Image 1: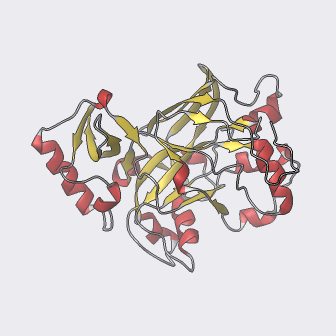
Image 2 (image 1 turned 30 degrees about the horizontal axis):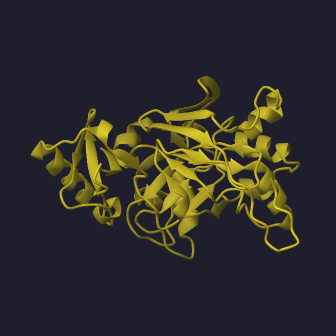
Length: 315
C-alpha cells in the first residue's frame, strides 16, 4: 500500500491510501501515526476499508504533506560507502575505520519537514545549497535494544527523502566538532507517499532493495543510484538507533546519500563549473522506483541576522 497525508482546499489534514492514481481518505483520521503501533494490521485494515468505500478524492486538488508531518524524530545515517568516501574527501577528511564497524547518524529537525512539492528556501548566510538523494524508513511500532533481524519488522514502510544541505555552513560549524546543525536543519523534503514494507520486500537485494534513484536539476540528470548499494542495512540502522533507547511510531531513519547523490560529490569528481551549487530559481527533481518524486523550486534566502550588535550580518 501507498499512504499519504494531505491537506484539502479548506485546510483539513487527512490521511489516505492510494489505489492506482486514486486517493481514498480514511474517515476520521488526520495523522498517519494513529494507524501505526502494531505489526501493520491496523494500517492494512484501514486501507482496505477506505478503498472499499469508493469515496476517493481528486489528488490533483490537494496538497501532499510529508507522510508523517513533524515526525517524533529524524535520525539521518551515512550508509552508502561511495558517498562517505567521496564526500569526506571533498571537505578534506578521510573515512575513519570506525565507519566500517558501526553505523553513524545525526539528529535533525522534525519542524523542517516539507512535502513532495514544497519549495525550498536557501538558508540565511549560505551560498552553497545542495540536495541529498536518500530513502528513509518510517518506524511502525515502539521498540528498544532490537537486533537487526528483529528491527526490520519494526519498519512500517519507506519514503523518498532529501536532506537539503548548506555546505558552507556545514563545513564551518563542523570545525568545532559538533554538527551538522544549521547546515542541515532548515528543510527536509519527503516523497509523496509511504510505501509499506510488504510492497518493497520483493525488491530485497544485497543489504538494501533494488530501487533505482535519480536526481535532476533544471531537467538535466545529475545523480543515479540504487538502494541495493547500502553498506549498512535498514535493520542494522534501526537496531543501532534503538540501542539503549527507544524508536517510536513515526520516527524517520534516513539512509544517507546514495553514491553520486549530491552536488558535493559531483563537483569533487567532475568540477564545480559542471556541477555548481543550487541557485535561486533552480528546479530539483528527485525520484525513486515505487517511491514517487520530489519536485522542489529553490527560492532566495534572507540575510543572516547578526548575533550581537557589533557583528555584521552575513550576505
